[in-house]
Amino acid sequence: MFFRKGSVGYPYWLPSFAVLASLISLTPPVRGAEAMQFTATRVWPSTLYTRLTFESLTLPHYRYFMLASPRRLVIDIDDFGLSPVLHKLSQQVRSTDPFISKIRVAKFDTNTLRIVVDLKQPIRADIFNLKPVANFQHRLVVDLYPKLKGDNDPLSLFLANTPSVHSPFKPSTPSAQPAPFIVMIDPGHGGEDPGAHGLHNTLEKNVVLQIAQRLKKLIDKQPGMAAVMTRSDDHFVPLAMRVAKAQQQKATIFVSIHADAVANRQARGASVFTLSTRGATSAAARFLANSQNQSDLIGGVSRSGDSYLDSTLLELIQHQTLHDSAILGSAVLKQLHKINPLHKSRVERAGFAVLKAPIIPSILVETAFISHPEEERKLRTARYQQQVAEAILVGIQRYKAKHDEP
Image (cartoon, rainbow, N blue to C red; front, side, top):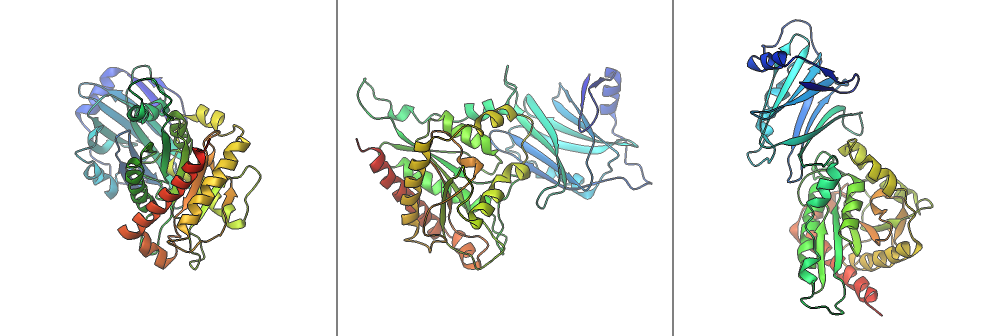
């Protein structure tokens, strides 16, 4: 039976009879010296993968292995004890979760906490530690992906599960029909990364997803246009994978939707940003870019996809792409001004990682400041969400009209 050891150490072998014995009986917790404990646990299911997160004050050292008949993932953690949040962990598993049926936790021996994840299908597990960042302490992250034959990278799965939007526009006979105008809509944050918070606990990841869903419905009704979303539910997508999805779909444009927060609660208004390769146009733009680029640290990027990150995000951005991004941004900003005051009257530029698709005009829309009490209230309403979606659509249509000019 092959074990993998995390954080420190190396793989090693253990006799199979020891593994069987460990599953027959999970010993009760040992009372006595106070062990380290997990302070929070979370389960994030989605159609692509399920994420388990274990948060603690200290860095956990772990080992894990897979078992069949029935399928289980077993994680052993050194020198950690049981805690109230672990007893409630299985309650967080939804019946609709495509990967997990239940989770059991107990002390295996005096020095080992054992977590057994009962599985519904063969999976590939990516397990890694994340250092403290933002409001999070040390985290042990367990990502469960479907096990695909010959597939060692969740990025491939992410792209494979993106339905093609080309087929609805394929002509039945060869013709000069133009290629579809594909809008990649990117609701910011998601899953473990909540984005910004409002005073009344409104989460950025939720309101931007709702706006994105409204925008997709509007775009899909337009002749010759179609929309695809980087995420359609509450799960975390690394920044590079958002860019990869736009490239894989041969998107015409990329629109990332956000609702950020700043310390000054008087700051308000909508903004539109494009990528800058030479620094930000203002201190506020630089601050927002830095906060959005922190998403990967908060959401947690595993070892998978590192090669893609390295090769894609460092590519030179073509001058024409930046020019087109500015035209798109100006068209959207003009429409947003009709429904909400603008934070800045011009399109700003900063080094947003999610805008680095080399040949796809890309903008980031800050729909309002969730940190402003009145704008937080508006962001929660269906009326304002629809207004934002309609404003972005009209801006896209104005850009498309120029795009289609001979």
